[in-house]
Length: 171
Image 1 (cartoon, rainbow, N blue to C red):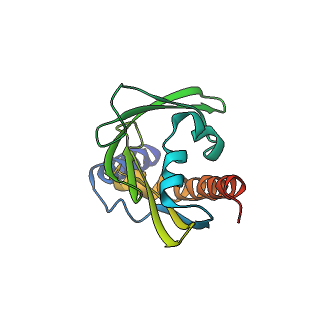
Image 2 (cartoon, rainbow, N blue to C red):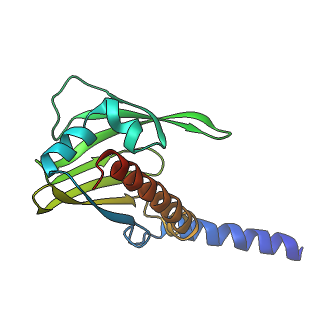
């Protein structure tokens, strides 16, 4: 009898945590690095779908999902090869774009990620590149359980991407 009450109470707490919304920026991931290239050259490289796998190795394939030119509203498909789960396809849309400065991609997939790439020219041929990722699923249950793990894993991938880009654009 006591175990049934505990199970019912546990389900009640989970239900409440699912309904409560919290700030999604708490567990946002962010990484920054300096690259020896201009923002123009960097943007041309990172926005080329054929090059994404070179600097973002977590994605096994990245391709255009429509025929629009690059800009707000452009859609892409990111294909991930996940252990155990297999292939996962995510549709992304460009929601913010300022030439040679900022690119923001969003998805309505389960995690609702928003990925922002910010480029600032520090000096000629020296660009500060900042990656940030926020998971917009706002339930307390999601943010307080998966949030810290996703932040850790995402920061690892961002560090790896910056390392790959430093190999491509050496100092």
